[in-house]
Length: 421
Image (tube, rainbow, N blue to C red):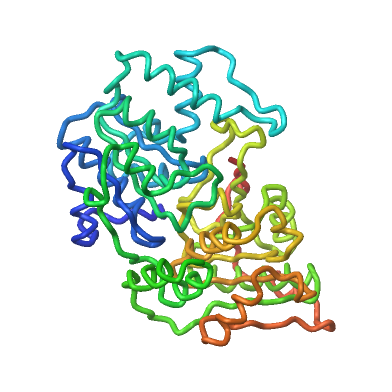
């Protein structure tokens, strides 16, 4: 079985210190993309569970997306943690709203999903009023804490005796996410109580490319200063600007095939949920089988088949669903204005940084002409000038490439090649 989780003996000294921090007070662990926050989170949950003999119903691991929930669950056998202890905070809030507030969840008619802000309000009022709910959990681990609301941390600080939060402000891409000061204040801490991890996952080429999408110069340099991974393969990230969509899809299939033949875990990250199945179908026409990690359309989650991460079949997800995931190589197609119209400015740059930072070894980006529609082209050109990226252009006359792949090796597959979250 393929798993992202390292044995505890393979963690760095700094990571082990974070795992073994006492639970006499709440903890916040800051770490850039690639610092192993999720590794530390799982091992810390296992450490606290065993050291203090905490029963499974008395602790929770909270994540922001159902895809990340499935990603973490895929490795829990190594540490003997129960799967039902990992859930999204939204799911936990909905369950407790139904249990203590009312059977019917508030509904966001415009968004066609539960009104999560109203649900959090109801749960917060309940835990403020009912002192018997204080300390109902012994400990809570929170991954991607920058994307939970300040209200969420107020709730958690009341219902759990101990809270450890893992966070990185550079990866905050959800509206209403809590800032560093808000998290610390909600937990009654200051910066001296925080633990800092260094980036160990991303290769220098990946980190260099990602750094162009960090708007603040000081934050950008701090991120690069924390990168400790050696560059073993001299392979720069590649950006391909195709003549048209068919050419972009052909080249994407070619790149995926190459990485599969190197036994790499491949992630394909697209801008919007409704593009997932179109890309999956287009890749299937080119003899590439992928698993689709789609967020439930109603936002409720929990009922759809989980996404499998136990083999090398490529995973296709949106930027928001891919947060916290790790792949050897990442493909970022459709980097055009019409695909990313819904996000602008610094938030768009953070979104692209999150996508790039999912890769440990290599990144492939693509878009279609005209060049004027390619998002963040000045940043990409700057990376090319500094030899941190190679940009290639497709020609109008090019040979069809689909048939070139017919006899190539196929990725692992079973009866459920495409799983939908």
